Image 1 (tube, rainbow over the protein chains, first blue to last red):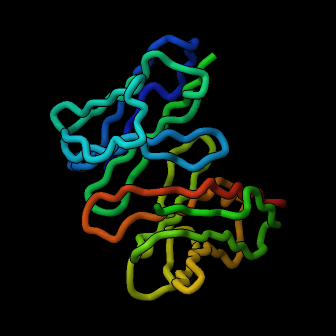
Image 2 (image 1 turned 60 degrees about the horizontal axis):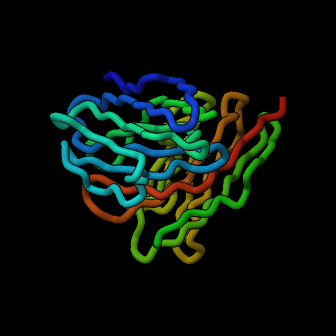
Length: 111
Length: 115
């Protein structure tokens, strides 16, 4: 069974630029999550999708972050414009029931 | 609001020694509890989970954890660590419900193994 795929693995951008991350969940998993993991901290949920609908986006900075999950499969997370404090690893996870399966993450550095 | 505290940021143990990583949670109802491991450059891998039944749960890689409701704790243990156990360990809590879960993670404990 293929795991959660994410791309790119690394990205370096300057502040005020935009960036997008892509996630392909495990086939058949209805729920998809985006987490932000700042260095030295645990992952923090940004947004949760159930199929292509948003379940929870209470911690998503909506003035600069956006996410979509077209057709209930792949998802993209966008940051525009980026700030220095957005430097982090962005993790995508998917689940069918309780257990969440995580992708390898995208490490974003904002300079 | 639910929260998770991992009091130890960094722990160093010798290979072959026993290990205990601490986790305390705050949650108003019966929680789901999880331990994940993260190796450098990798995503999180589930070690074990608890949501009901026997309070001592067994996981992968020889790990176990014990749920103590009276202490709001869910400590992770391993009788004898291997060099490959060096990683970051995260405790997480989620609500008791069917289906998808919103998890709250602790800040993590970095485990270093001395040869």
